[in-house]
Length: 560
Image 1 (cartoon, rainbow, N blue to C red):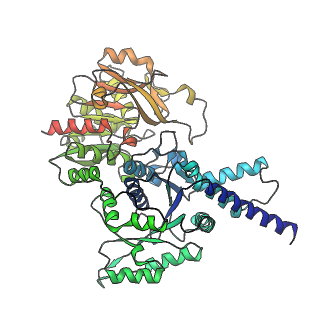
Image 2 (cartoon, one colour):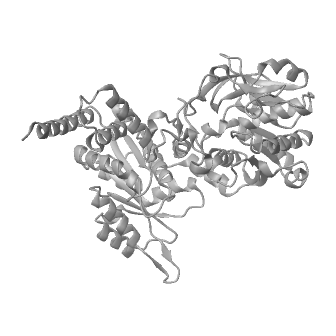
Image 3 (cartoon, rainbow, N blue to C red):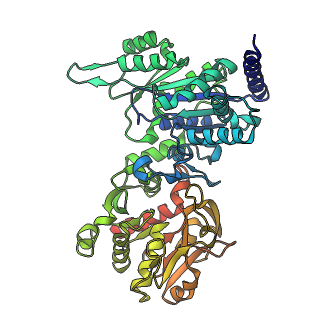
């Protein structure tokens, strides 16, 4: 062999031994969830449901998402492009699926749980610039795939988890997903079938004209994966009609899986019903058997079932107006909508959301659009579009004693509205929208003024908040100190603290380290709370966000 061929062989052997050494020191098993036929089938929900079932069987499970887009993270993406940007405790701006992972498992995720193609290439290119590859030609294989594999196994180091579930974004056949598929192929070969399996989510469409379920799209999807060297161990089939046994056997035969590995995933009434459906279909059992793991405790999910019963059989209904700039796309406010579901169940109340575009809200149509509401939530956002509509909605809520909740920009708009219409600062604004306002009630944080790059530079992640006793915030949390997650650049200007307090505003939460305002309230109002943080990010099925619970309770009281 030539010197170059020797280098390639030695490099591959070294890579394999490094991975094997990593695995020998760890007992972690790996499950990869891929998708086929079409996007939006619910890979994240299936991954979260499987992790939940493994968790209640006694296993430590976590989930990570690998996204094929070139952006380093979704932080700079318009919500219309990618939906909500979810934020973790450690300040990572991540894919919204991580919100599902946390809501199902009740376990915080981190920077390591979301990886993009942009982040992988950025890391490899930086290493190349440093000379780390000793002059070698940097290629997709092995350098990019090695880095993907390293990140795929990162959460499994040190036996922190028994099972790491990795959701691969995109669908089988996507060009941008090929390096991830290749990395999975290599891992299955290096770790063995008992340590690494693939769950493939696919679609079984129903043709009403023929009155038939069609398996051909699933066959083609599996064929595409197989052509790239990855063969699914389990098939989860999304369907609108039950898969009869003969059809399951046909799918198993043509897709080369065992019949018990063909899992029916009927459309569910709620995403929170999916774990129970997957438990009925024994998705967790087949995965554990293929990974040669004991079945552990039989899942019971008593609390989960109780939550679902409250969701299915509410005793009352409230209507909340969601005032936002991105209401055309529900995923833009995904965590807020899910937090309302959690809070509604606690209050045994169905929360109906009425989406109201803030850009279309004016003084002339305010009464028409808002008078029927039991509560008003003004959503987060960036930029000047639709700001005046948000301020108008807040004034209506304040003057008509309608329960109000403002999050991030919603809180800032509440402060601006109070400054203008109660304190008489008619030109009050945020310097984000008006750099020359004579009353910059909301202004740019000092440490943000020198920052020119947009990505990952905001105040991100969990920050402390000290709660003032006797406030609605204190009643909601029943604690003196909390930590909530942030995602913003602008803050309340503390030069206006005294003027606001003299006017009747209560600063119920402050950061103990910086003195920055975290929450505002109005005494004498049924519920008027603004939070600079995002409580929706930490809301889970079994631990709903306290402020959402209190807000829904206030809306329910108003209706009653």
